[in-house]
Length: 434
Image (cartoon, one colour):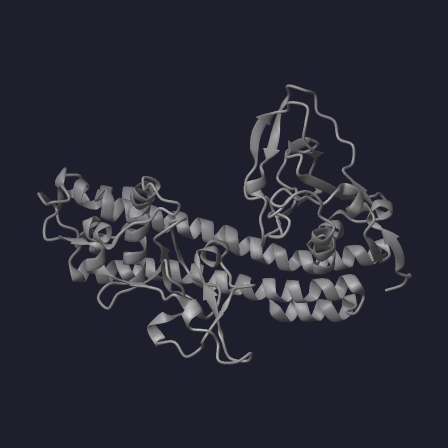
């Protein structure tokens, strides 16, 4: 593309903490620090809060950079979107706001500049303050020097990277919808027993099918009465089993005892922090010669049973199972069945862990035995597997695709911003990854 790349400081080429106006006492959108993503572009949520007179102000198209440790090191950055047209929002004093200047610099390009490894390393290297309360000053950000492309090329670069992020965001939204559908089905069929309750009440089958969105042959597999059990009333013919009766919960290893044999063959260590962020970037390393059961692959169900209790399906690539994580499997029941029953009991497990008078609350194996599940007859379970399993498989497929897209984006970003890779070549690479 035509035009020279000019050396410019951020403070000259972009607006740092640009002036925005909010009246004291006004209720406006508010983006808290925990809503800034580490590996995505958009804020994870937008709250509302009264403006008390302090904190940064921003609008759609601005970039928020968390400037305080450890948020800066973790890459918490967001491209502001989703606000009502023309509305100014506010947030923490620990943000730096970055925006493009008319006819000189592009808003979205500013966001990707803030995400670049070179800028991130510079900002971290210029943090000031005492240990644990360090932050990068705005003036240091303003003094960061870049080679600024012409505005047309900035927009082209932002378009390439933004297209990849748009696809990632589309997958995320699709998965939110799929997850809501599966959770609603699971609650209706296995917790509230809606089909059985409807049949027991004498509601006509055609009415039940219309209301619950099921077919007559599927409805016929549900019983029409309840029986008492240790779980309370359950459908006739169903069983009550504990969580550890429908799945195996394998605890991980103290992987510091299993170091890699060399620098070329190793597995990233999957700890609670990796499970929370969904990838193993920057993880510790372990031997690749672990027993197969301690190797984690995409699609495995992981459950952190201490500290921050969470359950998720791992889609961050092959790794090694660390202690404090369960790898959940079953030889008898489908993945979605034990995954959603574990999720169903998660809030109870979190309450147990929160009540522990220790630094890291946890649950014990007895709590898995005490957590009861309603288990249908095999013909019904097999039929339901044909409905629910594809929905879960699609979520896993979308997450794996997003991981590939993110890898391409993160590979292209520093090369595009440095000029080592020019737009036409990057465009073809981005298209090939879609």
